[in-house]
Image 1 (cartoon, helix red, strand yellow):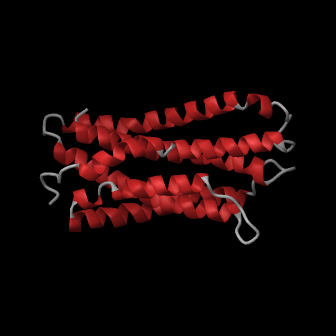
Image 2 (spheres, helix red, strand yellow):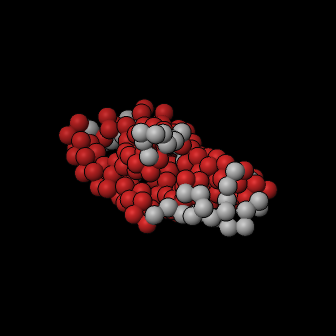
Length: 218
């Protein structure tokens, strides 16, 4: 992988990690915030999962158009900043008497979706425009292949988190009876799972903000 392709690939890794994590997130939120039931209402579960898709559509259209107007370089990295900010904010979110945790999570997932949506067209275009004709197909394939590694990375993170908190999780025989120490551990797990998704993005952020303008992006 060339430098621009590697930076783009890390973005695709992050995007895929976040999208894959949402199903795990809704399951854990159900345990923590719906004691005695063990799962959230179907409407809330669906709303959280659809929030990312809705944001992605806005991000693809918005960032794609802005990249054509003001240049790839100026926009590349801004969408990653949005993903990182929304990820950290979500991992620190909580409920209050005036705010429901589901609404807060949906808000941050929409913003994260906007960033993810912007990353797809920009990373694809920048990879294609920096690659030579001979290697363009291979570079594009390598960048998109990082989506699979993102899903794998998310699976490993939740596996290690489960192993780390297994003693607390074993205190409960079912999701509905997970309370006190068990629920507290699950609360920590979903925050760590989401928060870790920002780490690859933080690594790639500097290179995205300092990448030169593409040959055809000015």
